[in-house]
Length: 275
Length: 255
Image 1: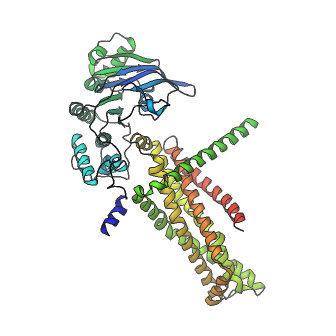
Image 2: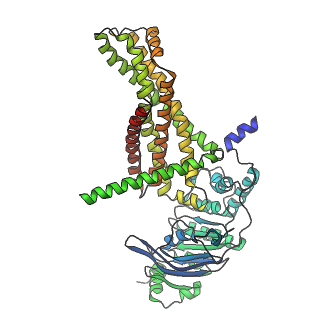
């Protein structure tokens, strides 16, 4: 009888067989070909083409309003393109034929606003996907939640409510929630937005540690140049006309492209003390 | 002007189509309700227990006013003994379901639209999608089911309170002066089981309208705090209109 009431409290399907495969992250390659997207008269993405290697940490930088977040939302299929293709390990994610769509890969996104569910605790937020997808029994879910919170430096904070967290902690919970899926591809939308420099630095360290520990492919969208250069294997610069330059952080820093030079100059002039 | 009219007609048909589609999708997820039992219970409690005090006060005074005004008129013709039947039938067939559901629309429908709307604006619904969790299953289905359970229960309670309020006034008002036993005898003679079933059917349909409109408007919310405020108002206005229109057609169908 007590088991029945327990099931009433937690939902009837918690102990049933897993319906979702829960293997470790493996990293996937991503290719974007001539992606275009307009919102009415506003042509946001113009012929965007990128090639991102499996396991790579890739940043997309550029001024606000150049479609960086829109590009990410295409990759996680929240938006469909007007034209162009996105391939995961060579398979088109928007293919009409289900057989041609990529299978067996998991992706997750850390939103600019963190997008945590305020009515749930930290632990419930992190374990949401695991419970909804009935990935494993409840005791294992609790272990996974503890483990993912440890990875982002929030061990033992399961019971806190979202309203009790600072901006930086919210970002880290959002990362832990994404990691709970064991994603092969993780996307960060402006991870340092609204964070002070110290918290941004802590967050950068968390992402660096994850990069070392896990094999996942990481895409970061940011207008924080230093953050992107510090973390990334390669960086792409985007402006309203499309992709301006792609290269390693050193190549970007040494770029002679006037758009890149201007972006670097305007984002670092306060540090350099130039006019 | 013709262009504006055409645009409004297109918007209306688009809204109707989207609402029917969302309703169909929500109903299809009913089979997965056991996975969302905690959420369904929480919503049912919030709707039922949370609305109960206000619904009781509303039903009590509606019953009292109905008895006072009708009873006084009937007394002019010496027919005040029919007051029990009139209040009872009014509460069971019309006032109980309609008044209570308008109250639920104002209290619960607006809150649903605001909650789902805020989740839409602050990217929580996008986050659900990236977690491969259907927002319709996670948000709309539990709310619709909760309303389908809680609102009829609330309406039955309101009917009883309203009838009791009418009996109280009929007994103590010197002009009406109908004792409790006469009031209830007349009422029981007038109300058939079918009348109660019809009232409950209305309550179930109206409850469904409140939840469905609240979720639909919430999902369609755009913009920041202003958009959430507009959605709240829109949900209440749409629910009110749809309840009143549905009331006419249901009454006609069940005559």
